Image (tube, rainbow, N blue to C red; front, top):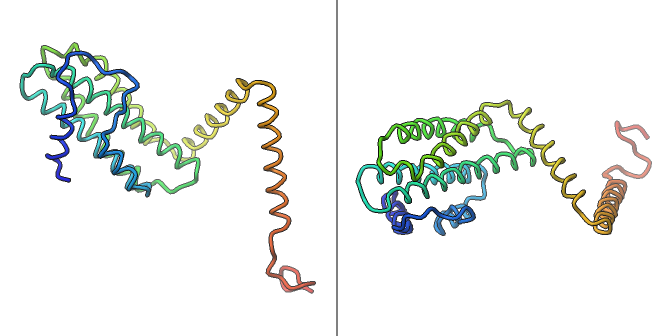
Length: 219
């Protein structure tokens, strides 16, 4: 789908009212969700998110180019969606690290893209618009989120993975502590059973060696 058509669709979805949007609003369009469903490969998924973020910035730049009613609310919405998209990309990366997937090439592309995003956000912040008060705080958030994401992308992957693993383990402990005692015991029994079954599967793993044969060819 051409970029201009996508932008037209997004613009049509933006309400002309002055109020800001609720925080729990879905930040992707139906079309974008379909794109992600068709982008199961990690590099394609990250590329899709990057394009979605760039579209939000383009919508903001187009809105700033002309005076119209409700412009501040539209910019507020696009900035909020942009920030959610960048955070979603970071979550994708963290999940990939937990799953031991290769990321190097995709991260370099994303890092360059976010550097451009940071420069575009700085230019937006430098725009002297009368309705800037409507979106100044979410703009600050977007700039901070982008800076944080760039810092994470510049971080050593091994160090980032260790941090993610520790956070995951800490969250699991917190969830376990919040459980009712009976539920906690059920989870512990299930974990113990899974560990026992895994050990049994390992013990019963079929061998390609003939009876009496040992590794190294010794009989």
